[in-house]
Image (cartoon, rainbow, N blue to C red):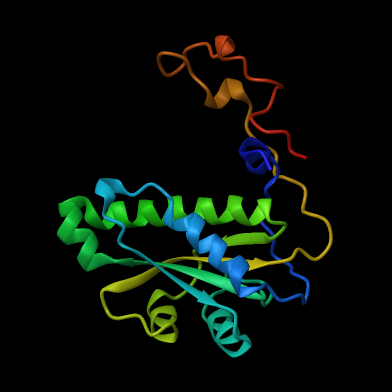
Length: 189
């Protein structure tokens, strides 16, 4: 799948079929995540893959952002000690940004493989860390639910117009020379 197609077509999936996800497929997603950019090449991330029903149920119980039990989940955690030691005063922010880059890679790789995903940030960090048996310096920052979508992909959200969000040379600069297509930033599906 062409990367720009994956970007345009990917949607957050919150309802999954009962079909389990092959652990090797989850491994490919972790590989994609580890290829993400990392500020100062700190790579303070850890990826905890969860596919056991009991642990998924426990994680869901402390994560109000998860609506239905997914077949699998990837927790993106940041070693804050490593981030601070290697990234200096801005290390904590760099670690979170790196987690976000890694999550985006997971989302796109999963979509290209026919899997649905949803990024979850609404969860109790300490409880998730305890359930995943993370050491104190390794903090869960993002959960990505993974599975095969139940039914068709949801319709995309309406996006703001290019005139509102794109600028050339300066804020407020006319973006018409950029060749942006259509009246909206992304076709809502």
